[in-house]
Length: 319
Image (cartoon, rainbow, N blue to C red; front, side, top):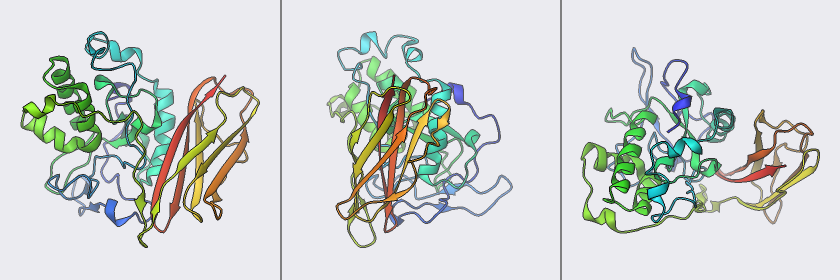
């Protein structure tokens, strides 16, 4: 959760309507308008997470989740279970707001009002999520409901984050299990551990997730699959130098790259859209500005073909 990003304006009413048609396996329906405005809906969380992405959940191809290697089962007593510890590594709003802006575009949300979203950590900092990795951050709507009327917005997920931290720090649940639960299907975990208030013995069995698990290929209408794998990135790099990023994907896919600095998405020449060649290779080259703020900045490549979309992200360190 990112308390510094409380909404400055009205809450979201219809956040997930895509700007263009989305794959049928990830599409959500939109309820008719009411006095409060339309609310994005989908089937209730009785459906398997592997079969459908519910409103309020991130797209696993864009946000698979990532963990902080400094937080392990052996270190929780001096990290996440210490009051105020997460405040020492929470990224500044200047970073999360810029990332939110670019990810709203990557997610294809029709509503692009930044105040309607929280740039949220999928695996929360309270249970060892990676603080700045774009693979662990996504623009989560503040106001969104399932088809049964259940609210599943950002503040609802906050309840689960607090509950899981409590279970981990009381040694009622392993850290790895908490991370897996919130990364794979946080709505189902919320129903079990917040609404149901339970912590079954199975929660004590470790089931670690990788720090940055590669997303599964997204299916295309023709039955093929698309994925993006970043094969090279100039990092670290000095200001005023030429940076390059290369990736492989499905041949013929339409690809774009977004580089987000502290000042916002880069507008450097060389970062325009491109099409993957016969072997699926794509690449970009651009100049890092001489006044670019030093630090670690996300580079996100998104490719689309046949109605399916996949993304990959890496961090570029500017010195």
